[in-house]
Amino acid sequence: MNLGNLVRIAHAFDASFFFSIAPRLKLSDQASDTSRAQNTLPFYHHEKAEDLRLPLDCRLVGVEITDDAVELPRFRHPTRAAYVFGAERFSLSPEVLKACEFVVKIPTRFSINVGMAGAIVLYDRMLSMGGFGDRPVKAGGAGAAPPALHTWGAPLAKPRGAP
Image 1: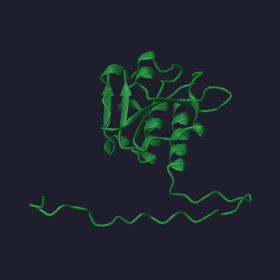
Image 2: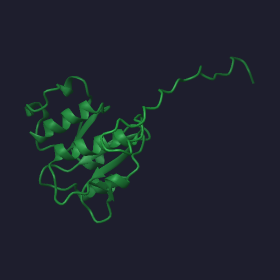
Image 3: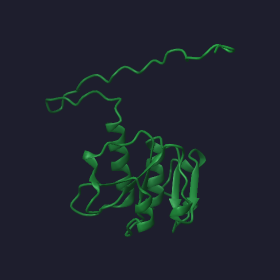
């Protein structure tokens, strides 16, 4: 059930792909993915952590409760990132943790399920990557207007045959 929720959350937050390492469950058995993400998102399954291949410049972020993990509110999300979560009632393996460039933890009093953790991390990413105005100072206020969308200029190109 939590795997389907995690897939649905990734789809809702516009993830580019979804991957699993040594999956214990089959995604096709997850009825909780009512968004039908497998019809939209590319899915990659890896038998071992060493088999994991990410897109160019994509940085792996582990979500795990460890002593040296950065608390999520203090973490600057990379522009290109893939997030890896431990299976329910299991931690990330030492091999997966070694592959992670960053490890973050959600500052809660106890462990939460993987679907909830995925929602919190992706929501935090969305907020921290910008596109929203500043929060209001006064409770219940609307806050600042979102910044205007960036308008790209014409591409810069060298004329053919130019030195």
